[in-house]
Length: 89
Image 1 (cartoon, rainbow, N blue to C red):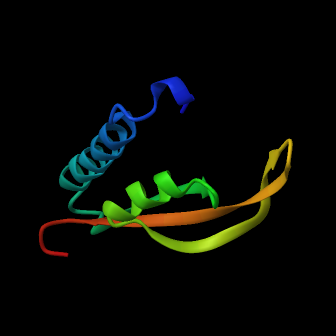
Image 2 (image 1 turned 90 degrees about the vertical axis):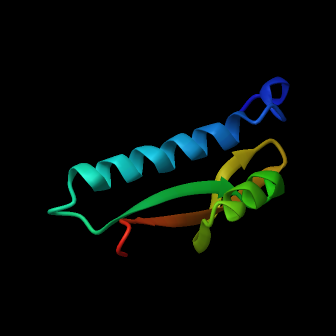
């Protein structure tokens, strides 16, 4: 997200909507699906985003070494996942 658009809660709204849509899909496909996993990647130096994702229950599961290229060198990416379950799971 561009710096001028940060700190307005847009990232939080996007996460909430993504989780809602996953829940709706689970309800529609309840005969076939018990859960949905939402994956994301985030630069390891993006502490604000990592805290936001963690607050929603995302967990770090992996790392992609030297994934992001920057003018100051490459940065690793954390892979995070959130498992969205139906009401029983």
